[in-house]
Length: 177
Image (cartoon, rainbow, N blue to C red; front, side, top):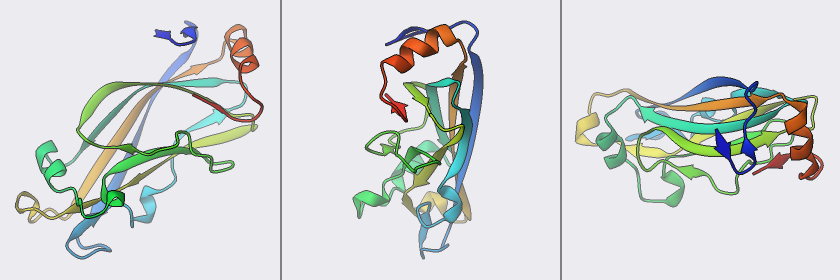
């Protein structure tokens, strides 16, 4: 796999993650499916990290339990904060991985993401938040709940000959690209 840092070592350990976020109709916002106001949609564990490894998030997938056209047609555009979006952050200090949340503009499968993450903490957790508000459109009448799923393909890089030069290029503490 080619990246901006060269090849990911062959002994890297691939794994996938999946996070499911829910919004119930009328709970807590009347007439809406409100992912933002649902507490379970903040701080979901994506994966646990150890400080001796570097993690490469290679790709992402997104879908929901309603047809894509219905999901996109139902987006509440009355405020920018209502647009469905997700973001990654670290548990140890709540640092956000990227400065802006990632808006959901379409369903996608295996979209390249190519982000390295590591932590100097002995153990840390990468968390995901999902927010957004959907209106109940005609196609969603009778739908009591919508679930959105974000999946990642991650490689745990354990090769010290790769990790040392990578860390030498980074500042102390967290390093994120």
